[in-house]
Image 1 (tube, each protein chain N blue to C red):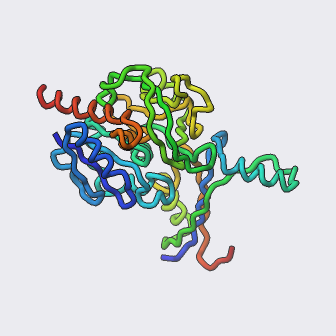
Image 2: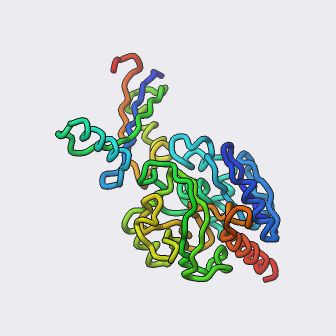
Amino acid sequence: MNVAVITFPGSNCDQDCVRSVELASGSARYVWHREVSLGDSDAVIVPGGFAHGDYLRPGAIARFSPIMDAVIDFGRGGGLVIGICNGFQVLCEAGLLPGALLRNRSLRFQSHDCFMRVERADTPYTGDYRVGQVIGMPLSHADGNYYADPDTLAALEAEGRVVFRYCDADGTVTQEANPNGSLNSIAGIANAQGNVLGMMPHPDRAIEAVLGSMDGLPLFTSLVGALARAEVA
Amino acid sequence: MSRFTVEVLVTPRPGLLDPQGKAIHHALSSLGYDAVDDVRVGKAIYLEVSATTSQAAAERVEEMCRKLLANPVTEDFRVTAAATGAGS
Protein backbone atom coordinates (compact mmCIF):
# COMPACT_ATOMS: atom_id res chain seq x y z
CA MET A 1 0.00 0.00 0.00
CA ASN A 2 1.59 3.19 -1.12
CA VAL A 3 0.18 6.69 -1.47
CA ALA A 4 1.91 9.12 -3.86
CA VAL A 5 1.95 12.74 -2.67
CA ILE A 6 2.77 15.05 -5.57
CA THR A 7 5.22 17.88 -4.87
CA PHE A 8 5.12 20.87 -7.20
CA PRO A 9 7.38 23.89 -6.82
CA GLY A 10 5.26 25.89 -4.38
CA SER A 11 3.49 22.96 -2.72
CA ASN A 12 3.53 23.51 1.03
CA CYS A 13 1.27 20.80 2.43
CA ASP A 14 3.00 17.76 0.94
CA GLN A 15 4.66 16.94 4.28
CA ASP A 16 1.33 17.35 6.08
CA CYS A 17 -0.23 14.85 3.68
CA VAL A 18 2.56 12.27 4.07
CA ARG A 19 2.30 12.57 7.86
CA SER A 20 -1.50 12.26 7.66
CA VAL A 21 -1.27 8.99 5.76
CA GLU A 22 1.38 7.69 8.18
CA LEU A 23 -0.74 8.60 11.22
CA ALA A 24 -3.54 6.63 9.55
CA SER A 25 -1.15 3.62 9.50
CA GLY A 26 -0.51 3.88 5.77
CA SER A 27 2.68 4.56 3.85
CA ALA A 28 3.28 7.50 1.56
CA ARG A 29 6.08 8.94 -0.50
CA TYR A 30 6.80 12.16 -2.34
CA VAL A 31 6.63 12.23 -6.14
CA TRP A 32 8.30 15.25 -7.74
CA HIS A 33 6.21 16.98 -10.39
CA ARG A 34 8.83 16.40 -13.10
CA GLU A 35 8.54 12.62 -12.79
CA VAL A 36 6.42 10.97 -15.46
CA SER A 37 5.34 7.81 -13.62
CA LEU A 38 3.53 7.14 -10.35
CA GLY A 39 5.34 3.81 -10.00
CA ASP A 40 3.36 1.26 -8.00
CA SER A 41 1.21 3.83 -6.21
CA ASP A 42 -2.24 2.77 -4.99
CA ALA A 43 -3.57 6.30 -4.46
CA VAL A 44 -2.55 9.88 -5.19
CA ILE A 45 -2.82 13.01 -3.10
CA VAL A 46 -2.40 16.41 -4.77
CA PRO A 47 -1.57 18.64 -1.79
CA GLY A 48 -2.17 22.25 -0.91
CA GLY A 49 0.13 25.15 -1.59
CA PHE A 50 0.75 27.52 -4.46
CA ALA A 51 1.97 25.29 -7.28
CA HIS A 52 4.01 27.32 -9.78
CA GLY A 53 3.13 30.43 -7.78
CA ASP A 54 -0.56 30.19 -8.76
CA TYR A 55 0.46 32.25 -11.80
CA LEU A 56 -2.17 32.72 -14.51
CA ARG A 57 -4.81 30.86 -12.44
CA PRO A 58 -4.36 28.50 -9.48
CA GLY A 59 -3.60 25.06 -10.91
CA ALA A 60 -3.43 26.22 -14.53
CA ILE A 61 0.30 25.66 -14.93
CA ALA A 62 0.55 22.74 -12.50
CA ARG A 63 -2.00 20.93 -14.62
CA PHE A 64 0.70 20.67 -17.34
CA SER A 65 3.51 19.47 -15.06
CA PRO A 66 5.00 16.23 -16.45
CA ILE A 67 3.54 14.02 -13.68
CA MET A 68 -0.01 15.16 -14.43
CA ASP A 69 -0.49 12.91 -17.47
CA ALA A 70 0.09 9.94 -15.17
CA VAL A 71 -2.24 11.39 -12.50
CA ILE A 72 -4.98 11.99 -15.10
CA ASP A 73 -4.62 8.44 -16.49
CA PHE A 74 -4.66 7.04 -12.96
CA GLY A 75 -7.81 8.97 -12.03
CA ARG A 76 -9.62 8.18 -15.29
CA GLY A 77 -8.75 4.53 -14.78
CA GLY A 78 -10.51 4.47 -11.41
CA GLY A 79 -7.51 5.09 -9.13
CA LEU A 80 -8.15 6.97 -5.89
CA VAL A 81 -7.10 10.63 -6.16
CA ILE A 82 -7.58 13.34 -3.53
CA GLY A 83 -6.95 17.03 -4.19
CA ILE A 84 -6.80 19.26 -1.14
CA CYS A 85 -7.03 23.05 -1.47
CA ASN A 86 -4.56 23.91 -4.28
CA GLY A 87 -4.81 20.22 -5.21
CA PHE A 88 -8.58 20.65 -5.74
CA GLN A 89 -7.83 23.59 -8.03
CA VAL A 90 -5.29 21.48 -9.96
CA LEU A 91 -7.78 18.60 -10.40
CA CYS A 92 -10.45 21.01 -11.74
CA GLU A 93 -7.97 22.52 -14.19
CA ALA A 94 -6.95 19.00 -15.24
CA GLY A 95 -10.56 18.07 -15.95
CA LEU A 96 -10.67 15.25 -13.38
CA LEU A 97 -13.32 17.24 -11.50
CA PRO A 98 -15.93 19.61 -12.97
CA GLY A 99 -16.19 23.33 -12.33
CA ALA A 100 -13.66 25.88 -11.12
CA LEU A 101 -12.53 27.66 -7.96
CA LEU A 102 -12.98 31.42 -8.28
CA ARG A 103 -11.67 34.27 -6.14
CA ASN A 104 -13.32 34.33 -2.70
CA ARG A 105 -16.47 36.45 -2.54
CA SER A 106 -14.76 38.56 0.16
CA LEU A 107 -11.73 39.18 -2.08
CA ARG A 108 -9.67 38.24 0.99
CA PHE A 109 -7.35 35.34 1.63
CA GLN A 110 -9.43 33.37 4.15
CA SER A 111 -7.43 31.55 6.81
CA HIS A 112 -9.48 30.24 9.72
CA ASP A 113 -11.32 27.19 11.02
CA CYS A 114 -14.55 26.15 9.37
CA PHE A 115 -17.28 23.58 9.87
CA MET A 116 -18.42 21.15 7.22
CA ARG A 117 -21.26 18.68 7.10
CA VAL A 118 -20.43 15.22 5.79
CA GLU A 119 -22.95 14.53 3.02
CA ARG A 120 -21.67 11.12 1.92
CA ALA A 121 -20.15 8.41 4.09
CA ASP A 122 -20.09 5.76 1.36
CA THR A 123 -17.01 6.98 -0.52
CA PRO A 124 -13.49 5.53 -0.13
CA TYR A 125 -12.58 8.78 1.62
CA THR A 126 -15.41 9.19 4.09
CA GLY A 127 -16.26 5.69 5.35
CA ASP A 128 -15.03 6.53 8.84
CA TYR A 129 -17.42 9.52 9.10
CA ARG A 130 -21.22 9.50 9.53
CA VAL A 131 -23.66 11.21 7.18
CA GLY A 132 -24.65 14.51 8.77
CA GLN A 133 -21.58 14.59 11.01
CA VAL A 134 -20.26 18.12 11.58
CA ILE A 135 -16.47 18.30 11.35
CA GLY A 136 -14.15 21.23 11.96
CA MET A 137 -10.83 21.95 10.29
CA PRO A 138 -8.82 24.90 8.94
CA LEU A 139 -9.17 26.41 5.52
CA SER A 140 -6.60 28.66 3.90
CA HIS A 141 -7.19 30.01 0.42
CA ALA A 142 -7.86 33.03 -1.78
CA ASP A 143 -9.63 31.11 -4.54
CA GLY A 144 -12.08 28.65 -3.01
CA ASN A 145 -15.35 29.92 -4.40
CA TYR A 146 -16.71 26.82 -6.12
CA TYR A 147 -18.45 27.51 -9.41
CA ALA A 148 -20.00 25.22 -11.99
CA ASP A 149 -22.53 25.95 -14.71
CA PRO A 150 -26.19 25.28 -13.74
CA ASP A 151 -26.39 21.90 -15.53
CA THR A 152 -23.18 20.64 -13.89
CA LEU A 153 -24.30 21.88 -10.49
CA ALA A 154 -27.68 20.15 -10.87
CA ALA A 155 -25.93 16.92 -11.86
CA LEU A 156 -23.60 17.12 -8.83
CA GLU A 157 -26.61 17.45 -6.53
CA ALA A 158 -28.79 14.86 -8.30
CA GLU A 159 -26.00 12.29 -8.30
CA GLY A 160 -25.06 12.94 -4.68
CA ARG A 161 -21.55 14.04 -5.55
CA VAL A 162 -21.34 16.87 -3.01
CA VAL A 163 -19.30 15.17 -0.29
CA PHE A 164 -18.77 18.10 2.12
CA ARG A 165 -20.79 21.30 2.62
CA TYR A 166 -19.90 24.37 4.70
CA CYS A 167 -22.21 24.74 7.69
CA ASP A 168 -22.41 26.29 11.15
CA ALA A 169 -21.47 24.46 14.38
CA ASP A 170 -24.94 22.86 14.47
CA GLY A 171 -24.70 21.52 10.93
CA THR A 172 -27.04 24.10 9.41
CA VAL A 173 -26.00 25.33 5.96
CA THR A 174 -26.18 29.13 5.97
CA GLN A 175 -24.66 31.88 3.86
CA GLU A 176 -22.92 33.20 7.00
CA ALA A 177 -21.13 29.86 7.33
CA ASN A 178 -20.08 29.90 3.67
CA PRO A 179 -16.52 31.30 3.82
CA ASN A 180 -15.95 32.01 0.13
CA GLY A 181 -19.24 32.23 -1.76
CA SER A 182 -19.19 28.66 -3.11
CA LEU A 183 -22.38 27.68 -4.93
CA ASN A 184 -24.62 25.53 -2.71
CA SER A 185 -21.98 25.92 0.04
CA ILE A 186 -19.91 23.24 -1.65
CA ALA A 187 -16.66 22.43 0.19
CA GLY A 188 -15.85 19.14 -1.52
CA ILE A 189 -17.04 17.09 -4.50
CA ALA A 190 -16.42 13.74 -6.15
CA ASN A 191 -16.26 12.80 -9.81
CA ALA A 192 -19.01 10.67 -11.38
CA GLN A 193 -17.31 7.34 -10.60
CA GLY A 194 -16.58 8.47 -7.04
CA ASN A 195 -12.85 7.75 -7.14
CA VAL A 196 -11.64 11.39 -7.33
CA LEU A 197 -12.28 13.80 -4.46
CA GLY A 198 -11.52 17.52 -4.28
CA MET A 199 -11.96 19.70 -1.21
CA MET A 200 -10.87 23.18 -0.16
CA PRO A 201 -10.53 22.78 3.66
CA HIS A 202 -7.49 21.00 5.07
CA PRO A 203 -8.05 17.58 6.68
CA ASP A 204 -4.24 17.28 6.65
CA ARG A 205 -4.07 20.15 9.17
CA ALA A 206 -6.53 18.47 11.55
CA ILE A 207 -4.90 15.13 12.34
CA GLU A 208 -3.47 15.53 15.85
CA ALA A 209 -4.81 16.97 19.11
CA VAL A 210 -1.96 19.48 19.19
CA LEU A 211 -3.32 21.01 15.98
CA GLY A 212 -6.66 21.79 17.61
CA SER A 213 -8.72 19.26 15.69
CA MET A 214 -8.47 15.62 14.72
CA ASP A 215 -11.52 15.73 12.48
CA GLY A 216 -9.39 15.31 9.36
CA LEU A 217 -7.82 12.01 10.40
CA PRO A 218 -10.86 9.83 9.51
CA LEU A 219 -10.46 10.92 5.88
CA PHE A 220 -7.02 9.33 5.82
CA THR A 221 -8.01 6.24 7.85
CA SER A 222 -10.93 5.80 5.41
CA LEU A 223 -8.52 5.95 2.48
CA VAL A 224 -6.00 3.57 4.05
CA GLY A 225 -8.84 1.19 4.98
CA ALA A 226 -10.25 1.25 1.45
CA LEU A 227 -6.80 0.47 0.03
CA ALA A 228 -6.26 -2.36 2.53
CA ARG A 229 -9.62 -3.91 1.61
CA ALA A 230 -8.73 -3.61 -2.09
CA GLU A 231 -5.46 -5.49 -1.42
CA VAL A 232 -7.27 -8.33 0.30
CA ALA A 233 -9.95 -8.56 -2.40
CA MET B 1 8.06 34.69 -40.95
CA SER B 2 7.13 38.00 -39.39
CA ARG B 3 6.76 39.08 -35.78
CA PHE B 4 3.31 39.87 -34.45
CA THR B 5 2.25 41.36 -31.16
CA VAL B 6 -0.80 39.45 -30.02
CA GLU B 7 -3.07 40.85 -27.34
CA VAL B 8 -5.24 38.42 -25.40
CA LEU B 9 -8.09 39.79 -23.31
CA VAL B 10 -9.42 37.27 -20.80
CA THR B 11 -12.68 38.26 -19.13
CA PRO B 12 -15.05 36.59 -16.68
CA ARG B 13 -18.09 35.04 -18.36
CA PRO B 14 -21.19 37.26 -18.33
CA GLY B 15 -23.35 36.48 -15.34
CA LEU B 16 -20.45 35.10 -13.33
CA LEU B 17 -19.94 36.76 -9.97
CA ASP B 18 -16.96 39.12 -10.35
CA PRO B 19 -16.08 40.30 -6.84
CA GLN B 20 -13.16 42.43 -8.07
CA GLY B 21 -15.41 44.25 -10.52
CA LYS B 22 -17.96 44.79 -7.77
CA ALA B 23 -15.35 46.21 -5.39
CA ILE B 24 -14.05 48.62 -8.04
CA HIS B 25 -17.60 49.63 -8.96
CA HIS B 26 -18.25 50.38 -5.30
CA ALA B 27 -15.06 52.47 -5.05
CA LEU B 28 -15.98 54.44 -8.17
CA SER B 29 -19.46 55.09 -6.79
CA SER B 30 -18.03 56.40 -3.53
CA LEU B 31 -15.82 58.76 -5.58
CA GLY B 32 -18.99 60.16 -7.10
CA TYR B 33 -18.90 58.43 -10.48
CA ASP B 34 -22.60 57.64 -10.54
CA ALA B 35 -22.73 57.04 -14.30
CA VAL B 36 -20.93 53.69 -14.01
CA ASP B 37 -23.48 50.88 -14.37
CA ASP B 38 -21.17 47.89 -14.22
CA VAL B 39 -17.48 47.01 -13.87
CA ARG B 40 -15.86 43.72 -14.84
CA VAL B 41 -12.20 42.85 -14.35
CA GLY B 42 -10.21 40.58 -16.62
CA LYS B 43 -6.59 40.36 -17.62
CA ALA B 44 -4.53 41.26 -20.66
CA ILE B 45 -1.71 39.01 -21.88
CA TYR B 46 0.73 40.16 -24.59
CA LEU B 47 2.66 37.68 -26.70
CA GLU B 48 5.34 38.21 -29.33
CA VAL B 49 4.69 35.54 -31.96
CA SER B 50 6.45 34.57 -35.19
CA ALA B 51 4.01 33.63 -37.96
CA THR B 52 3.46 34.05 -41.68
CA THR B 53 0.33 36.22 -41.34
CA SER B 54 -1.51 38.00 -38.55
CA GLN B 55 -4.36 35.55 -39.00
CA ALA B 56 -2.01 32.60 -38.51
CA ALA B 57 -0.61 34.28 -35.38
CA ALA B 58 -4.12 34.86 -34.01
CA GLU B 59 -5.20 31.29 -34.71
CA ARG B 60 -2.14 29.90 -32.94
CA VAL B 61 -2.83 32.07 -29.88
CA GLU B 62 -6.53 31.13 -29.86
CA GLU B 63 -5.38 27.52 -29.56
CA MET B 64 -3.18 28.55 -26.61
CA CYS B 65 -6.20 30.24 -25.03
CA ARG B 66 -8.31 27.11 -25.28
CA LYS B 67 -5.51 24.99 -23.84
CA LEU B 68 -4.00 27.21 -21.13
CA LEU B 69 -4.52 30.96 -21.14
CA ALA B 70 -8.26 30.98 -20.38
CA ASN B 71 -10.42 28.64 -18.32
CA PRO B 72 -13.34 27.63 -20.55
CA VAL B 73 -15.56 27.09 -17.48
CA THR B 74 -15.37 30.67 -16.29
CA GLU B 75 -13.66 32.90 -18.84
CA ASP B 76 -14.07 34.26 -22.36
CA PHE B 77 -11.14 35.47 -24.44
CA ARG B 78 -10.53 37.81 -27.36
CA VAL B 79 -7.39 37.75 -29.51
CA THR B 80 -6.03 40.61 -31.61
CA ALA B 81 -2.81 40.31 -33.65
CA ALA B 82 -0.88 43.17 -35.25
CA ALA B 83 2.54 43.33 -36.89
CA THR B 84 5.09 44.16 -34.19
CA GLY B 85 6.03 47.81 -34.28
CA ALA B 86 2.89 48.70 -36.29
CA GLY B 87 1.78 50.90 -33.43
CA SER B 88 -0.73 50.68 -30.60
